[in-house]
Amino acid sequence: MLCCLTRVPAPQNSQELQAIFRVLQHLWQRHYQGLWQALAYSWSPPIQLFMSALAEKTRHELMDLISTAYSSVKPAKIASICGLTEQDAASGM
Picture 1 (tube, rainbow, N blue to C red):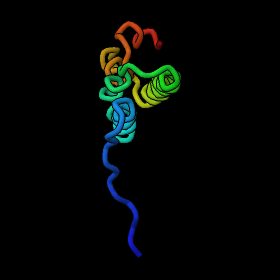
Picture 2 (picture 1 turned 90 degrees about the horizontal axis):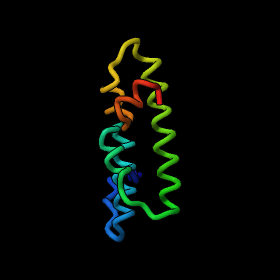
Picture 3 (picture 1 turned 45 degrees about the vertical axis):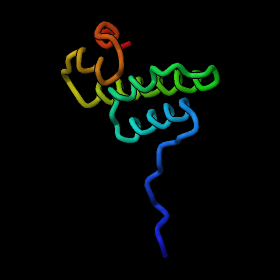
Picture 4 (picture 1 turned 60 degrees about the vertical axis):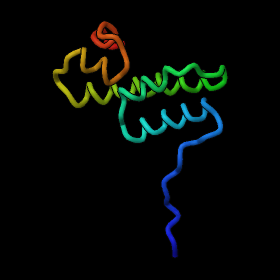
């Protein structure tokens, strides 16, 4: 029996679809700095709602994870991981 797991090629038909693919790649690889850059794409209105919700949920999950895992972490590090400004990171969003 052949295994059906293969690499999925990047979509070719739409710039927005390619941008969604990049967001999903960064999430899968847990490359959060790249995720925030990918989320900065100029999304169409229906997709923008989803991407905003995804960014908010991911930020909250990362902040919870960081607060549980570290007793001391610099705001600059939190800002780079969570895609925030240092001021927002220091205030806990």
